[in-house]
Length: 246
Ligand code: SAM
Image (cartoon, rainbow, N blue to C red; front, side, top):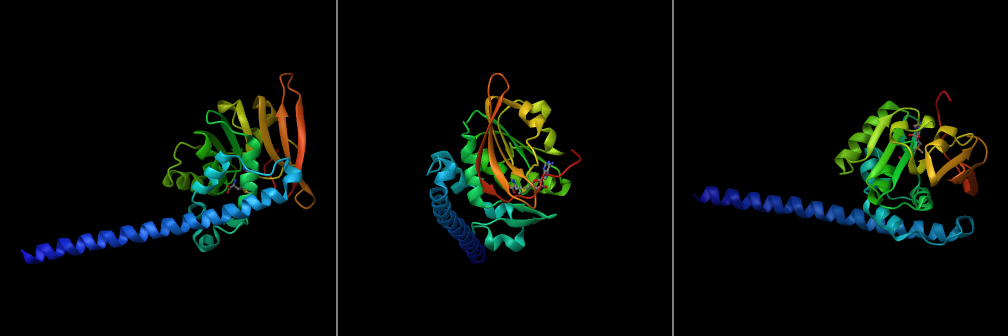
């Protein structure tokens, strides 16, 4: 009788211990994300001349503070997850620098009902940030292993409503088009015509354009009712190249 009581007491103590360790870990990650957010907001101010803006929208700040970047980083780099820098994710690819993720997301000016296509799922982190703002996120990745891992990580972290697929994002995602917004997270030599076609009138596309070894620029593309595109160069960047047979 007494054994059973002691056993139950021990179990309760054990559960409480695990629970509070988990809470402490969550807290420390939240603290790290808040510190990272301070660095990002400073970067935005430092680049305000390029951005024509000196602050991120509230929805982007909330999204960046919410997404557990450490869950999208390979185990061996997890201790660096809240450094404001890109990190390797395998297969010669990277998870983008948090400042760039915040900037690109902000430039899309997403609404909660918008449908958005991401080209270059990579780790799944950018897709999760988008998914904090809208539930209509489509993300395509050319490296099968990355696409499969990102899909699993998105599911595991609660972003199971993000639609993912393996394929060459140069050609977009025809069945889900048109999109209110498109974000390309690898540098293209030119703006892919299929993506312009899949952008809604009044829609916004953000894409790094340029050569892998030379200067690249983040470019904001908007489309009007006559299918004319307007292009605004935002700032110089460094991205891995958009690969594929195109
Ligand atoms: N958005 C990613 C994240 O949050 O981790 C980072 C993307 S990484 C800078 C660029 C990604 O684009 C890589 O995973 C790469 O394999 C992918 N990529 C390159 N060319 C592609 C293409 N034609 N179609 C789809 N994905 C492509």
